[in-house]
Length: 215
Image (tube, rainbow, N blue to C red; front, side, top):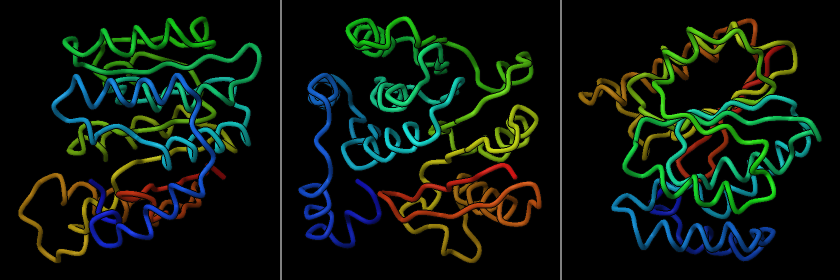
């Protein structure tokens, strides 16, 4: 459950009722995620999913990177805006759960555009020479700062980066956090806000999304 949902469930319910409906395949995937996983609330869900889809449709990216596949919901949302010959690479290290995204990627109309890799994201970023138009990061929070440093050279003017969970259930307000993940997320938000190569805005959507554009 997100920080916002915990604070104002009635407003959150209102937002869901007034958000565009998700495609049937995504509705089916969301249901199966809750049935077959123990951390079902990690899924992007309706509001965030429609946000990702709209951002992708606005940008019409040729090359998307996602770090943190989970069950594939967010990847399918991002794929909605791909150009005709575009592609999306999504990375995860959870082999036990890979059957779910593979299943739904194969069923989707974007099956030939999605490359699903079981690989450490830092290793991938060090190896690839690709430039990405849109990047979505929703993975291990303790590596967020490293990911940002590795991602920066993989962007060009106009590239958009999205970091999820940057409000971290409100824990970013702690002055001296004990949890390492909280310290890293606070550090990330500070680094991004001060980087002259980017402009950004933190959106209080679910658990917070840092929306970043390369100048």
